[in-house]
Length: 337
Image (tube, rainbow, N blue to C red; front, side, top):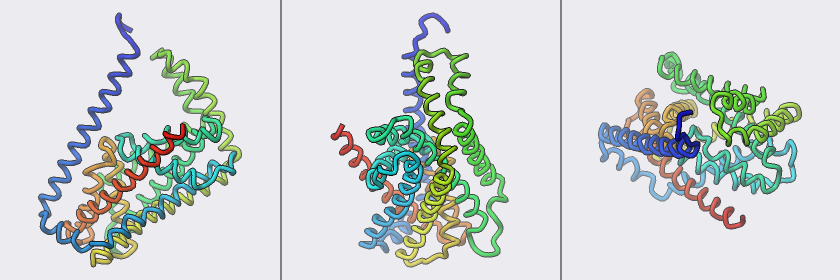
């Protein structure tokens, strides 16, 4: 290292870069939304939105389905060591953590440390972190299956698979590779080994202090793999159900808008929207590309593009509502520290 080098400067610069990425990503996403609205015309979108009226309450309540299913998937992993922890508490912690996942440009993992920290009040931190990581792995595998099958089996009968398109295939392939590497890290003591390798070339004191904790985490993950394989399969089952419940929300919304679609079309739209959200990791909650996924899916299905954007905005506002609920839950947990 050169003279005057300080680890604090690196940390500060890293935080600054992440903030810059977040704001740039958000601006790009908002520009994309603005462009899409300009393409279809606000009058057409406003007409679609006006059809919802008071039935929007149904849209706000419906997310309880997949929130509950995903919390059940997490509990399947927590039950390996601590079945006494109530589902209600995991439901609340997960809701708070997912709010941070949505608001941070971190590949929907920014809230995972928060989940582990809050759960660590009832169990050792390394076990809490291991349960969070295993549940996230199950959710991620479920996401790949949801997108891959949705783009293949979804849509309209007889229509060509969207996975034959290079862009969509490449995006799904990179997602699958990333999740595979994550699973390898979980299964092969990857966190401590990677940290040790990194420490050889970047000898940070903070990294050296973290090595024992990472080794303990890898030990806990190893126990999960030995004792919790059945639990992992159940976790995958519940999380896959959560992804499907999210797609079926589209059936509800399109029906409320007076333009019902089939479950296959709903799955196709949901899969393409989630793929767009994953591609847009640089922006909080995939702003812009998530909406773009709805727009593209509507076009491919022969639906009015304005309807696709309207549905995306309806889901976005619903998401912000639940993010707000999650922040309130986090605030209540913080008061009890």
